[in-house]
Amino acid sequence: MPHTCVLIPGDGIGPEVTSAARAVIEASGAPVEWVEGVAGASALEQGHADVLPESTVDLVRTHGVALKGPCTTPVGGGYSSVNVALRKTLDLYGAVRPVRSLDGVPTRFEGVDVVVVRENTEGLYAGIENEITQGVVTSLKVATEVACERIARFAFEFARDRGRSKVTVFHKANIMKLSDGMFIRAAQAVRPGFPEIEYDERIIDAGCMRLVQDPTDFDIILCENLYGDVISDLAAGLVGGLGVTPGANYGARHAVFEAVHGSAPDIAGAGLANPLAILMSGVMMLNHLHRDHGDDACGAAATRIREAYDRALVEGRTTRDLGGSLSTAEFTDAVIAGMGT
Image 1 (spheres, helix red, strand yellow):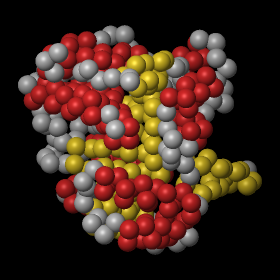
Image 2 (image 1 turned 60 degrees about the vertical axis):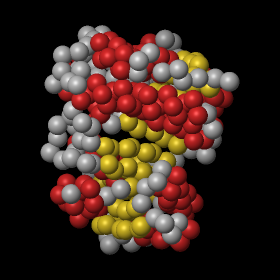
Image 3 (image 1 turned 45 degrees about the vertical axis):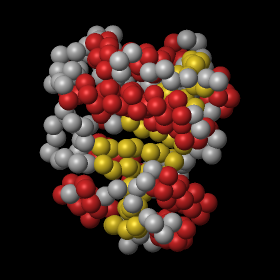
Image 4 (image 1 turned 90 degrees about the vertical axis):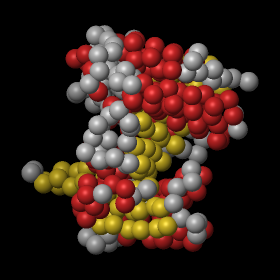
């Protein structure tokens, strides 16, 4: 039986890159069927009252899995971020950003293979701010034992299930002794259940310095919300940027896979967009269907797609942002041809 997945094209280059990912996934033979949702500025343009219509949320609730392109949140008007709204509404508490070196994408470092696991629901990104008096504002950092424990367990289970060997917690518990202290205590409490996984802790500023000195010192980096946002983009910069890194958000019942780069409206419709990030996110989606739903055909399709885009990169068949000359459609065709389909 095919899996029904929600496709959310998004805005700007979103429809172009999600269309490319859909074409590749369909050509791979993956047993996937699509239903489309709408989000971002395009939702408003289509007459919806919000950037994340309830109809789109309902589709994800019903089918459990979504592939989302970049979405634009209009400035002003009181609209919240589509990404934040999805995470809160569906309780997608675990953000995962794999970062690996790609042959054919020259960078300062080689052999980078790091996964950033980010708590996705609280911390400073809870968005609780108050103006105490004129010119004085406070932002409240929220930490709960429940959220700290479940993201720590998620990180260790992710490491075990993917054959990873080490979890390193980035924190600032030397200063924020209660909130960050709770975070590392949760990780310490979970750790004994995974004796095969090495455990480490780094104060985040020293950890960042070490990350840019030798990223091979890290395997899985576990962070609270704000730290994880910053570290994810820092790590992406080690391997070529946001255009070559996928992203996923996991909850207990739902998973949303996404390109984490922007919607780039300045090049929308020009055929210049690189669909690699959303395609890599699609591979993560297929691997999720393989692992969590026992579908070997999805796992095999994920491998075919990954090998095909890796081959295209090595052979220099890339879009302009990576030094090549291919259009969005031409790169898509190159990946499909590389699968031998």
